Length: 141
Image (cartoon, rainbow, N blue to C red; front, top):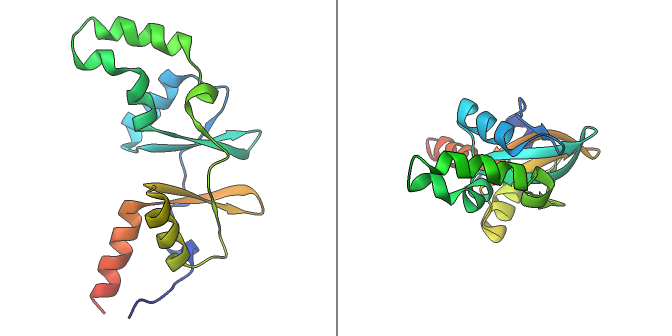
């Protein structure tokens, strides 16, 4: 039997996010530094998009092939901005919802991260890793 706990008990509250006018280079730096694959993107504190490591990899494939790719990546960073690459109007879940609803969204939409909002403001994030940890915990019951 699965126990539906409030999503607020599972979510990550110390969310690393980025304003939409920041550079792609800064986004990549934050992902590497914090070992994360998803960045909520905000504008004046309001959630406006999601940027994933996969989004960055789609535009910067050249560095996988040679040392020269680093120069190409710099050019690509100058050609694109976060607003052009991110997913706009991301699907979110309200902080008052339960974990089961979050799991349903992650599975149905095939997402790996889901921003959590409280009255429209970013309150947290839940990832597939968080979901697996939750499921492992309830299996121990």
